[in-house]
Image (cartoon, rainbow over all chains, first blue to last red; front, side, top):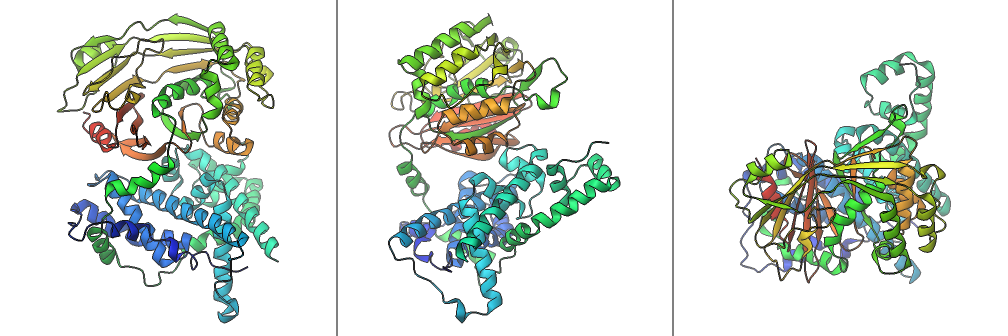
Length: 201
Length: 392
């Protein structure tokens, strides 16, 4: 099986657009504070890249990134200067991305059971290097989706270059516990990854 | 430092996150460096695979300005964004969250003994709050009229000795008076007029564990697979609860006069009766002293498994918590949501139960050794954040 999680998900990834469609045509634009706009412009690319890495589909990544900023707006329409927006956005974005790939995992299982889980792309039509990378990403996503949510979140935060101090603050941990938990999460990730590889060979 | 680094410290070293003292040890210890190199090899594959996420290319995504434009022009109404959660979240009332949290916190949050094994007593003070979704089904029998509920009542009445009772709440006129009476500086939101300020005096009690009765309770509840450690039998745990202050805004129910004397659950009163009630509560951290040797993580794991969590899930959670300083708040799984928020200059926890009939919210945080809680009815949890940010 070599379906790509992202490429199959377009039809399900319309939260922001669906919701937006419910807005009346004459709806007024959101009045954004300059502090919010600055944060948006500063962090958009990083947030988008993070969720794109997780879900693999540009359209869904855009929706999830916008949803991340919507949550920020709902919580902090005028973010104070002391606010650690980077950490907050990273955590929300990683949760949304993880939720999305977990939902996909459930859907995929259902589709396979129903006999509709077809191969989305023919790997022989792509260069070997690109195919190998996509395959690695697909298996990595599936591994994360199967993991304990807290462990998966810890991995995403760390591999988004967050410091131990920021991770500890975001997850309510003591900084000294990040190292051991990270090590355990990496081992769990690798175990699940290898199990998936073995299951497909 | 002569002791070798543990695995977690060596993992931190790979990320350049080791403290100065540990780093000095690493630099001079060939054995630890060899272990570091072995770990680097071990985690190389996982690191490579996980780094793929952060190296994802940007195939024609929206530019920041275009994204901002789209964000501005196509907003999601706030009601719309919470409707999914409402459908998913149904039953148990958040009014049980905080009192149950206090009960479970006392049961679960005894101090870890590992770091202080050479001390006579361990000490627990709340420095942070964390939330865990649990299935309350398993806990309902504890508070019911059945055999288990009666056994629990007996266990508590047999095991708890009140050394200082809080008495009835005392109503005061302003923050200064409340501070004087409570013995700590009470902070109230600037520019808001409370409808009532109440002070509950300090209390203290000792809980002596009767393992036989506690195990019998687990057996009666059908969880004989959970075995309490023999070492807890006879352990004496002392709890000191400082004076607490609550300030009502809007029309609120009168303060409770039960033994806890602290009205953390008032936000859960019937929504139609008290639609505009918001309550701010403040209390310096209770102090718990317990004998060394009490394995907190193990007891916490048993407690969590009792709620229906798998052994692995419970173990994973207990290992993430610093039990010497964390107040663990259980919330109804699938019936309430929570998120960390910046509040009052620290990280707090916002809990919401967006039920259709009587939505509720609670905001908790700890600052400078004092626990703060704002609870209210309705969906407007922003009100709690706004109130918190008005504190002097």
